[in-house]
Length: 129
Image (cartoon, rainbow, N blue to C red):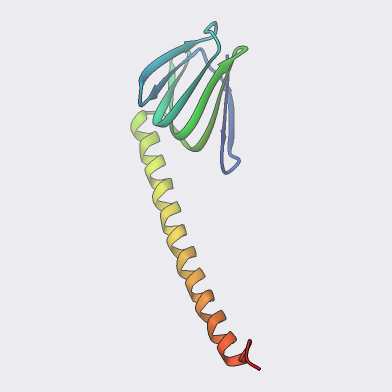
């Protein structure tokens, strides 16, 4: 079956797999190539991908997992892949930490710009006749 991932940032991954196991807040579900069409919502979880003797894990957050017509599609807010579940979780946590730091920096920059704008409005005496 075909496996596709699309994240909010536009990251994509396509591969072929034999089967997948989706772990969500409701438990686990195995999906083989002849599975009936299904849609699963995952707040936080992972997908274990099996291809021959190889396993790969995809840690996902806020995702929809859909299977139909021999294609497993995952639309996720965030996703990180690893050879083991621990590697995928570590990559996911590192990515979340990096995004948090970036958000903090953007917030600080925004407040500096807002302060400068207010000062310039006061200096120009805008709005006063």
